[in-house]
Amino acid sequence: MSIKIITDSTSDLPLDLAESLGVTIVPANVIFGQEQFKDRIEMSPAQFYQRLVDSPVHPTTSAPSIGQFVEAYESVAPDADGIVSVHVSAKLSATYNAAVQASEQVSLDCPIEVIDSEQATFGLGLPVIAAATSAAEGADFDTVVKVARSANERSRCIALFDTLEYLQRGGRIGKAQAMVGSILRIKPMIIVQDGEVQPLGKARTYAKGLAQIQQVARDFGPAENLCVMYSTDEDAARQLADSISDLLPEGQDPIVAPLGPGVGAHVGPGAVGIVSLTASTGE
Image (cartoon, rainbow, N blue to C red; front, side):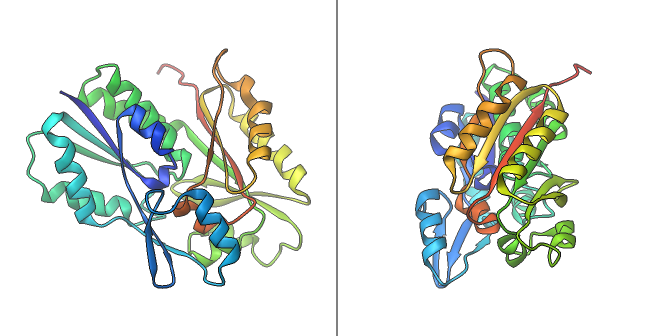
């Protein structure tokens, strides 16, 4: 018996990594016109971005259903001493609310803690990894919950976009709306803060934008874990990861991972981001 970790696909955890950590992922839905796909299960990131570029139809997304969460909780419960379910910000998606309602509907022999990460993509993914690692080390339910909440508080997600068009179309633009209309050939930068997308700055070129988000990551200080995410430019992401790897403990490398369809529908091609799980002060 152990503590089971559940998250949703907007965590952007690659499926093989999730499997190795024992994390169950409940997929969001990606919709092109009349066609619906389960994020990463029925449509990979590579397939999604190719279709995003080629299709005249702008994709939309929808949260997993309450029923999907009920099924997930019931599937892991027989081998669980507790379930810790960590999800994308409730201000960005209905996913958290669906998970809460599912937790109230099921009748299980173990407790469920549903946590609003107030983050997205690997801003959620790194706390999930921290919680799963704690569970794998044999921590009890309360300790894993504490680890997840501590990691959420230390998770910093920033990104450089080629355009805010996709974020605006998807209705997730939040306070970054202030940058729309003033941007002519300017590369916008955002930060996920207080559960929503907020403006971080603007750069005149993509290269200058990369340099700026690298500096912001450095300003966050030493990291317990790092991830560089990308939508379509893996080479830029890997170069960026190399440039900030010294923020991690010696011998540890940043994760480099694609933004999945559930997030990609809102960021578009050319996006790159950094998530820093800042080092714990031990308090």
